[in-house]
Amino acid sequence: MKKIPVSFGFDDSCLSTYAEAFPILRENGLVGCISVVTDFVGLENRYTWENIREMADQGWEIVSHTRTHDMWDLTPEKIRHEIVESRRILNEHGYPALVFITPGGPWQSKQPEQFLPGSLLEQAVRRTYEGFINGEEHPVKLPADPYRIGRFGCECYDMEQYNRTVPEIVTEIDKAVGEGSWCHLGWHDVRGRHVETFSRVVKHLRRYLEKGTMVPATVSQAAGLENVPA
Image 1: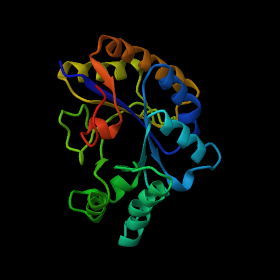
Image 2 (image 1 turned 30 degrees about the vertical axis):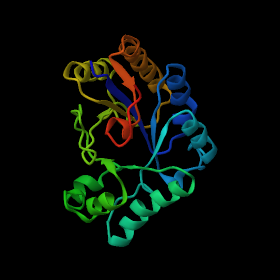
Image 3 (image 1 turned 90 degrees about the vertical axis):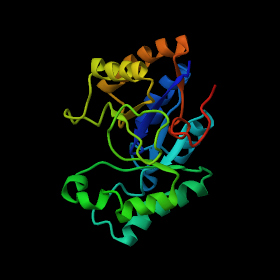
């Protein structure tokens, strides 16, 4: 039986990824994927390059989430700044950064044409990266198209319309297992009340891990860009 990969993604360089989520996943034999906004690193309530290194040393994947998280007015110069330069910075710190994760925001509804297939943004990402996450379609069938990686958004700060309850998240996990699909769970700032939700989700996943039904994976591994652990 083919083991189903499960991955965790953490956007926006929030310090809670290191302070809260990292210890919980480490204790349970799981790894995450941090989507780094490179200009945010080291700012207040953001993790540092030292924190990133510690997570990477424990098997976490480091990928790009732009330099500034500002996707308005995507001129060729702006696209290069956000897409190409963010990967260059990560490469200089020793991270391959195979994946680009598109920031969500009001720009997607106000300027949708800039995010369509064939747009300058997509062309730049395809030239620069081996894959990227663009959208919330979930679960992802295996083998996955590395340029259309879906995810299930579990928590997005304290915006209630984007936060999911434990039963909702558990349903998605069970659905992925039932369909034999990759399960990718997206998070932002896991602190306060969200820590309990996160812990309960991890506890549910442990049942599948202990049975050998699921296997921890990074995004690149699950998407077929690297080998998934046996």
